[in-house]
Amino acid sequence: GGRKEALFNRNRTRPDSCTGKVVQLIGDLNGDGSALQGRTFDVVLDNPTTFPFWVRNAAQHLRGNIGHYIFISTESVYPDNSRPNMDETDGTTPMPPDLDPYTTVRENAGRYYGALKTFAEQEAERQYPGKVTVVRPGLIVGPLDRSDRFTYWPARIDRGGDVIAPGTPNDPTQWIDARDLAEWMVRLAEQKVLGTFNAVGHVRPMSELLYGTKAVTTAGAQFTWIPAEFLSSQGVR
Image (cartoon, rainbow, N blue to C red):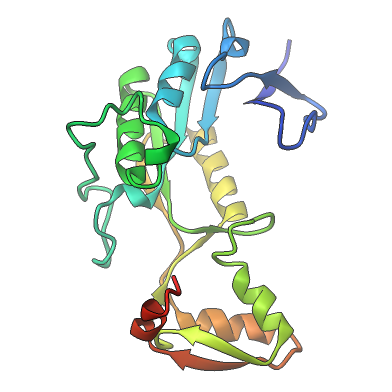
């Protein structure tokens, strides 16, 4: 009886971390997803990384048993991110005709990431017609981010000294804080908002990112702007 929140995962990264009202469902969408069988949910928040067959495998048990399916995709579904002000109606990346999206292995995950996520969005629509919200985040930042894509900057600037700054001060940057993204997705669920949405913050110049970060430190870092072409020629990505 009563409302029940559940977390379905392999229980490996932080074993038995579920507390309070959250029900722990242990399984693996690469194989045994039977822990989902016979359960109904008002909302499912699916946060997979890559593969369409994970969507399909979950749907074997969830199809017909949910009210709203929120699928976390990525802005990498767009084949060309160089054009400003793209919106959700822009074209996405198709799967190569010779590649089976249901059997693609990890070796191809990076190369076909955008295509696989595009197909996974489509798979969600096939499995749960009329019940899907697709969220396409940009660069997600915040606590516990281990990627070093954003966290490099506050960590490096806090050490002080001469800091290499890439490109020019006016180069555009965009990101979204994980906490803002999560709160917004809760609102989507509460209001059952369907459709496809890009999820990213306002465009800010690189100088605002770096000098804003410096402003909350006492290390006195100094920035030396290095042309992007030179950094690329040196293998800096």
